[in-house]
Image (cartoon, rainbow, N blue to C red; front, side, top):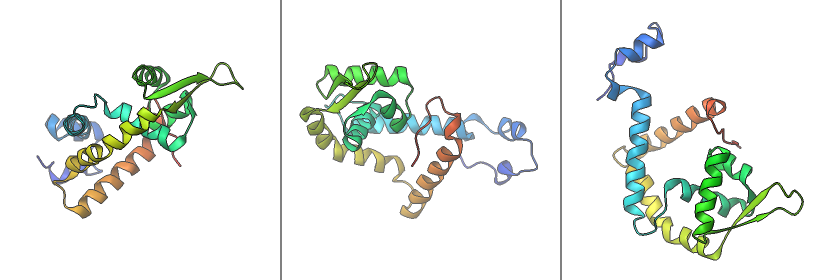
Length: 169
């Protein structure tokens, strides 16, 4: 499934370059497929907790940020405002977070991890780590690091194009 060596040549027009490749060798397809695989591995490793990778990301962000408003959380995990509101509502319903209206701006809702949310993060830590490792473990260690660095560069370079840009530090 390795693309032909010249498929990334700059002399070829980008539309022709990708059109000539089978779909399973195109970057967009591979990224989507790898995401599906990671979600399946996360579900397997974290079975029994009934939590999605996105919910885990939000809980992790709250653990790092402390109390945060929906906009800050959306920027921290790359979700749009509608999706973050839905995720927070689900986490609140399960008692993993508390939400309250901000005293200084009544239009703003703040979220905080509950004790149950923190305990859930502790229980998920090993499973989530195993899912991340299993996603890349077929690569030798040095290639894993290079792969993650390449993904970070791609996200950084294209961050402003996404529907919900991350606030990169």
